[in-house]
Image (cartoon, rainbow, N blue to C red):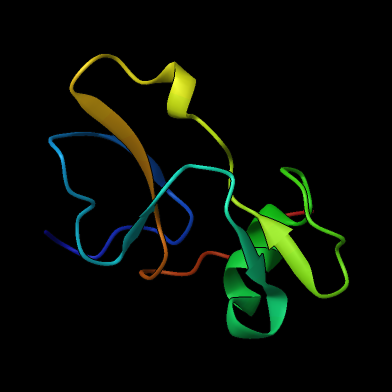
Length: 81
């Protein structure tokens, strides 16, 4: 797979999460370890915004046999404010 854009979300068929992605399950992550991703997501999906932020939780939105995943690495395009 070519490098995705950081924080891009895609519907993935199957039972495993592809390398470089994370299940969109609401997981809270430390900002210090994921600064670029935090700069794109902020605390829109949770976290305290100082030390943690959360990934979106899309588990209930996925069709049977699929899952929503988010790119944890890839091409960084800064947010245009």
